[in-house]
Length: 125
Image (cartoon, rainbow, N blue to C red; front, side, top):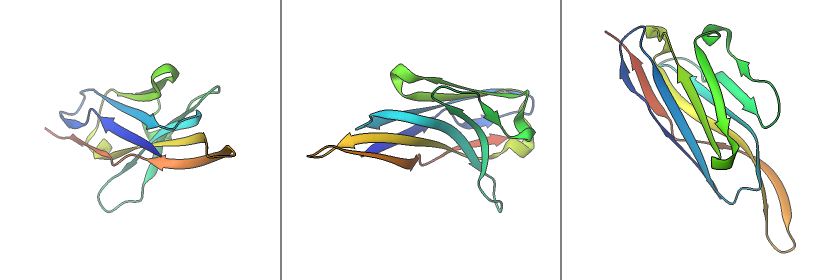
């Protein structure tokens, strides 16, 4: 089993910054992709940013130039540095990861999609 735990959300004024963290734990063989999604009230969940284990990052157009995603593979942790925050960035932010596990007898290799419970980011004056 794999768990994702987010932290770092909160209330910030427009123009401010926040840094989100998400740590993955459990029976992890490798993490293929880590990313952040967000869901604002009354809206669908949308991709904010993603970072594969060995490739280029991907950002939603609405956050390009303001948000930066990074990961520490040794800690199985992904970060989202959010600068120049706007009221429209207000949402619950969810961590997502495609995780490979190797378990059982005989060993079975499996890649599954995992989600954190979310952390609320509120941008308001």
